[in-house]
Length: 255
Image 1 (cartoon, rainbow, N blue to C red):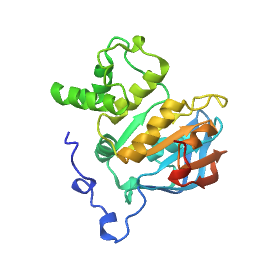
Image 2: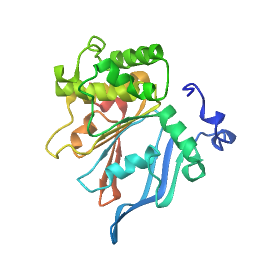
Image 3: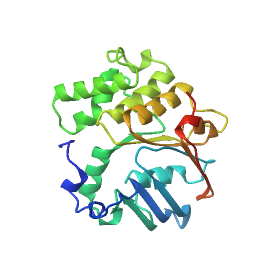
């Protein structure tokens, strides 16, 4: 797997034919329906949403508002059942399964709700796992994993086991594992956090630093409005639809 390829190396990009680049991610009248036994459930209804390169957007809403369905569509993990989604101007329905996989590996870093660190493996080994699964050399895996750990402030903890670390370090390690492939986009799913549990300040500050200093596009989904303290944009979902979309200047975010 060559992680240095560009999207134009595998796709006939329509975006390069225009003088103005399209949004990095664009949902147009997108809906998502899940079949449940004899019935079905609509998770999203006619969502229009653009995510620009370099944004830090927080997707906020109560349980069942469609946050997790939205982030899965943005990350090419699931396709909308109605409407459309374009990544860098390319329609997702035009992509083969192999192309979707390549794009996910090359451009996206996923931080799941549960960090799922292997208790029997060191922090360095946990962070290196995504590259090891792709068959990269041990040296390249370790080098990339150490770089990712340094980015999140855990450069001196690579030898430690997960049980030796606290919850904040676990969260940072989960982010490091998502960063190990040097992604352009970080998708952080914290939708399981209770409504009265604010985003940890250390994690919020780290995500903002990755966005502003390392130019990584960040999309964070959470139930708590506290995420808006670090994000430059807050998109509120309710009942599967966008209720509010508030943008702020970078200078107005917390320091």
